[in-house]
Length: 434
Image (cartoon, rainbow, N blue to C red; front, side):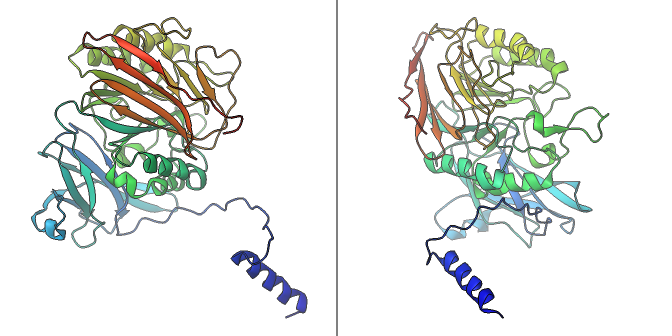
């Protein structure tokens, strides 16, 4: 070994432990393939297929050696022996090919006949190899205050940069009851590696806080250039979602009620199905519903970024939002932030009747705010954000925060006993840099 080689090794070690005031050159992250599925449960995620007050669904994946899969559940207690009274539910298994010639087995179990507003513990496995015990709480039957997290597109650099968004959101609102992801969870819907990053970023949060995924355009793809765009084959095996939407759009257009709010998810990617969804949406808005209504989908009704506009979506759905008093519309896609309140005819107004429209982004892919976006009273670019929304019988309180914790936007929507809504803008003054 030469003196130069030895000295280089010493310097490298010194830099690594911080003994020298040297900065190593920046290097691009090296892609690491997703780990092959194994016997131990992985990618555990809570969702709903039915009533959140009395049911819960969970999915996970293993390798093909797991021939039978189960979930066990019991009311959670501080006594570690609670598992002795756990009841077991069989899982439904779907085999899905993944890159490298491997087959992953996706398992889904449903818990039913649960007690409302009750803390449960559950685990998943094959009877011999189990996950850890996770907790979740069922919804209350009556309207009651709760918070949830809403994030825009994760999409790129999920492990390295989006992870800080979802984790910061959870630290800000650890008692959130669910998380809405407004589409483009990954960049390539068929990429098992990218889905591995998405599940890894959320980690155990996914197993304890139900996720509400919205399908985005990047969850669609083509097998060849001439094939029609199709929903990723991984979407339905890994998310167990309500099937109450229009025929053919199961688990991409759906709805559920939660403690005084109706959450409606639409699929804005299906251009030829906008009218079908409008008819279904109107039926869900016409029928008796809770005090608050929140709608979410991927493409904005009003765009923020340059050269973006979605007139077909605006024409098909916006009149229904206004006619039936939708309170909040949450979207993504534009990789910028925009919020405009109570829009009636496209200009930003404080008229009673229309919803508040929000566009947001949580991942690192960023666009600039376009010129003339007068519909929005707060915009932002080049900033990773998450939103915490608190719903009570009296109000919806909205806060958008940067991943470093700074309050970026805030407003309230209140409703009087006679049903009249009032909008209260609480947006803070922003510093030059955020």
